[in-house]
Image (tube, rainbow, N blue to C red):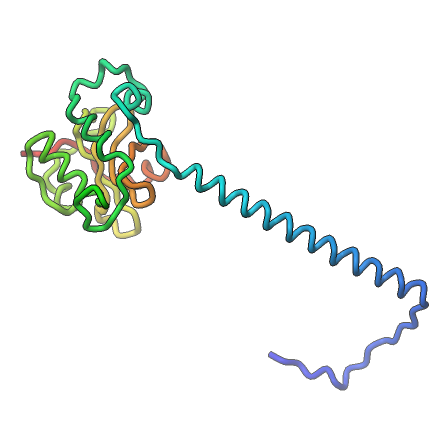
Length: 201
């Protein structure tokens, strides 16, 4: 809202030339400092942007030895070689809602293909429908191949699914990084885990 200041009275100050010059120098120095700050900010922002790009690059594991390092288990623990070779093949595949191939896949699509190829089980296409056919377990009782479900948002409805592996690690198609192995103990996932267990076939 505009205020009418036309009739307001302000005190008048008489400023000497010396003071005027000092004020002008201070003003110019202040502007220069702001310019320097903005330049540095732009440099920092550009640098952070470059670093972020490097961090989000997904390093694809090449073999079972590298997968075992991610899971923090010995390679001998990985009994189901077909499962882990499947994960290696799909690792880093970008996320695409409704996708069902190597060009893009979503969480339930990935789970669907994995279960069909590895366990020879046909499961529903949508994560909330898959969750309805799962026998609940406590997280400490989860076994390789069990399913973990999440609800991102306030609805409480299941809208994300992954396959449990070992040591709280699970594989899934994340919206930001595609097919990747993540950790249930990360707050982003642990806070939104709503159900887990084995599929009832």
